[in-house]
Length: 322
Image (cartoon, rainbow, N blue to C red; front, side, top):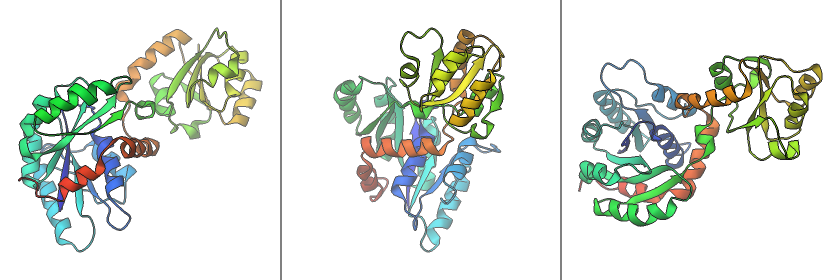
């Protein structure tokens, strides 16, 4: 059985998203990829393992400490049919990932952010390294990666398997997270608290025609004073507005509530003025994770377009160490 370990140089590099998306692409209904997270002995729970179980419940789970994972893989190998590939999310610790690779006879796929010391990290993994992927690549940095970065990585004895561009959906919070973080309360639409908010727009002094301005971004949360029905109605008219975040703790007039209900736009009342609320939202980002089916679907699309999956599969078909 082939084992692929997703490692990184730093935390929050995209290991969970990449592991889940690869499991989708490399598996099938009859032969799902076994999927799990490796963590240190004594760790009682792990959020990433729970994420895998939630997003891909049909995939065999192999989460646990290194010894537990090796035993689970052995059990899957002895069973008839079932998984032929195991994908394990490792860590940013080189020694831990190498121990995991030795215990499972696996290959390591290194996911990194643009600007990290990729070549030095790649050399530490030696023949266990299948290749490097750069995740969340900023716009206009593609030429740098295809030139100098790719050459440096090849000099380190491995190759660049792809670059996944930065994408708003992958860092989007859920509406319920936004409301909780801001100390807000739902006036309507609480049943839609799981929807993703990819962009935020401020409903203030808008010189453009209101609906045109609010349609300039997709899946938008509009931050607007609770006593501005004119701006609120303009935002509701667009099919890109996903919620109104009403500031100063002021609920809207009844007509706005009616129109919002007709359009299916949730209303959330939050304390504080509009500029303060917008600034406060910057602190939400570290709490946003890979925990939504729409994020998995988007990562699968991005990976299909930008990643050389066949090269990974070819390496998995060979012995892990040569």
